[in-house]
Length: 109
Image (cartoon, one colour):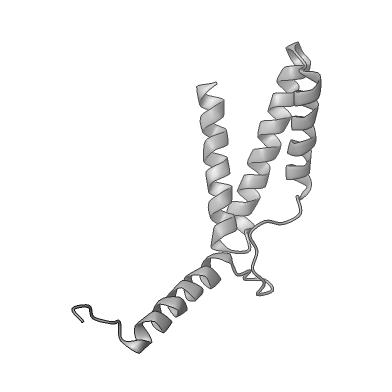
């Protein structure tokens, strides 16, 4: 009795706003599909292979250093590609975050 109900259209408007936001963030500007993640491209594939090699073999010395350089370089390449050519804002944001954390990791290491 003492509560007030939302006007009938408010809930629908809220859902429409959320749907619009989700579409804007995740919808591909290329083909209109929702894109959160994609199959890895070459730089990300190189990073993943180098990471597996590092985790499994634990190389030291020059090999370990070269492997870390390959990992950082390929990851930065992937991130830069996402920032520049990402199909939606989410992918561009993801690239920027990965680039930032990779650079921070290099600086702090």
